[in-house]
Amino acid sequence: MPLLRIDDINLSFGGVKAINGVSINVGKGSIHAIIGPNGAGKTSIFNCISSVYKPQRGAVYFEDRKVTGMHPDRVTHLGIARTFQNIALFHHMTVLDNLMLGRHQFMKRGVLAGGIFLGPARTEEIENRKAVEDIIDFLEIENIRKKPVGTLAYGLRKRVELGRALALKPKLLLLDEPMAGMNLEEKEDMARFILDINEEWGVTILLIEHDLGVVMDISHRVSVLDFGVKISEGEPAEVANDPRVIKAYIGEDDDFLRDMEAR
Amino acid sequence: MQYCGDFRTTYEKDVKIFQTPFVKICMGFLGVALVALPFLVKGEYLWISMQIVIAVIGAVGLNILTGFTGQISLGQGAFLGVGAYTSAYITAKMGLPFWVGVPAAGCVTALAGMIFGIPSLRLKGLYLAIATLASQFILEWIFLRWEPVTGGSYGIVVPRPSIGGFVFDTDRSYYYVVLVIAAAMVLFATNLMRTRTGRAFMAVRDHYISAEIMGINLFKYRILSFAVSSFYAGVAGALYGHSLRYVSSEQFNIGVSIVYLAMIIIGGLGSIIGSIFGAVFMILLPQLLTVVTTQLGSSFPGIAEVAIALEQGIFGAIIIMFLIFEPDGLAHRWKMIKAYWKLYPFSY
Image (cartoon, rainbow over all chains, first blue to last red; front, side, top):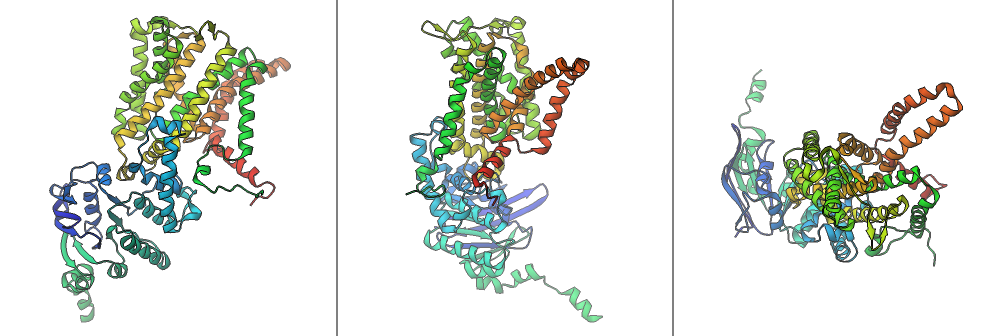
C-alpha cells in the first residue's frame, strides 16, 4: 500500500489546465522526485496534497484517508510537512521560535496556562525544546538558534525551513526545490540531510527539484510532468533515457539547428 | 567558581524572564520606584502617572492584536468604552463590587472583540483597519443610544472600589489597585507571547499561509487574538472609568483609538516593553510640553501666547521626528542601549 496516493487529479484555473489527470503513488520509505520544466504543475500538485488547492476532479489519499477537502492545518496533523519554493519562514521570529512553532500540534497549553507560564506551560516548553534541539543539532545550526530568521543568509534559511518541517515529526515530507539557488557545497549538505532524514528517521520524501544530477543521485523513483500531464515514471535511469522526457526537456525536432546548418 | 559572561547550561535557565542578577536588581528598583511614586508626586502628576499605568494595559492589548498578530485595529477606543460601560453598569446599576465589574468588563469586551474580529478572517491590512473603524462607529452609536444601559448622553456615575470597609477613594490608594492589575497583566502578556499561543500569533502575522500549513488554525488564532486584545482593552477601559468616576461616550471616540495606535507604533510593534514606552511617551510628552511652554510664557511674557499655541504643533513634530529617526520604535533604541552597555567599553 502506498503511503500517498494521488488519484487522477485535475486542476484548472479558469481556462488554464494546471494539472490534467495525474496519478502518482509514493511508496512508504522512499525518496520520490517530481521533475519537469517550469509551469509543468509540480508545485500545484504539492498544493493539492497540502489541500491549499482543491482539485476539480480526483483526490489525494494519505494512508488511505482522503485529504482533499480537508483544512490545510488538519492535513498537517495527519503527518504531512512541507517546505516552500520561496522560503516561507516567519521572518521576525528567531530560528528557535520558528522550530518551536513546528511543535505547535504537539503542544496543548492554551492562553491561560501560557500567560501564567509557571507549571504546565513551562514543562511543555522545556520538553519540546529538547525535541527541537535534536533537530538543531542534526542540521548543524546551533550557532544561529537565537537569531531572527530575517537576518540569515539564503542557504541557512533553506536549512531552517527544513528544520521547521522536521519539527512536525512528519511521516511524509514535501520538499519544493530544496536546492534552488545554492552553491555546490550547500547542495551537497542538503542532499546529505535529505538522505539522512530518509534513512535514519524513516521519513518518506517527495521532492521537486530542477537539479537533475541531484535528483538522479538520491531518489528511488522519479515522475516527470510536462504541461500538467505525467509523461514518464520509473527508476532514475529509466526516466533519463525515456525519449518523451528528452523531448520535454530538449525538444523534439531541431528545426532551428537544421535551418542553421542548411545556411 | 566565577565565570565571566552569561552561561546558561540548562533549558530551565534559558526560559527565565529575568536572566541575570543584575536584571533582577534593576527590576527590584523599578518596582520600589513605582510603589514609592505616590509619595513623591501628588495632585495632577499622580493623576497622570495613574493614567499612564492604565494606558499601558490598553497599549499592551492593542500590541497583541496589531504588533504580534499583524491585524490593524482602529477600534481600540470603542473597546475601552465597552469595558468602561460594562463595569459601570455592573457596579453603579447592579450594585455589584468593582472586583466583579472589572473582570466582567474584560470578558464582555473580549466577546465584543471576537464578534467585531470576524471580518479579519477575510480582510487584511488596510481593509481590516476600515472594518474595525466601522466597529468604532457602531459601538459609539450604541453608547449614545442604548440609554437604559449606558445612560445615553448623560453617562453613568461610577464608584471607586472598596474592600470591606476600606474605600480606594484617593488617587493614591486607587493608583496601587491599578498598578497591581497592570503589573499582573503585563507579566501575563509577556509570558503568553513567548509560549505556544504567542508564537502562533506571530506566525499568523509573518506568513499566514505557511502558518496554516504548519498546523495552525487561522480562524481560531485570529479570533483569539481579538479576544485577548479586547480583554486587555476592557480592563483598561473599566479602570479608566472608575478613575474618573464617570463614564460617557465622548471619552471613547476615534481620537483615543488613534492615540493608542500611535503609542504602539512609537513604542515598537510586537514588543511588550515597547507598549509601555509608547504609553509613557504619548501621555507624558504633552504634559511636559505644557510645563515647558507655561515656564517659557512666565519668563518671557512676550511669547507666552505663541508658545501655548505651538504646543500641539511641537507635539506633532516630535512624533514625526521619532518616526523618522526611530522607525522601529523606542523598544529598538532600548535594545541598542542595552547591547552597548553589555559590551562597554569594547564596541565589538
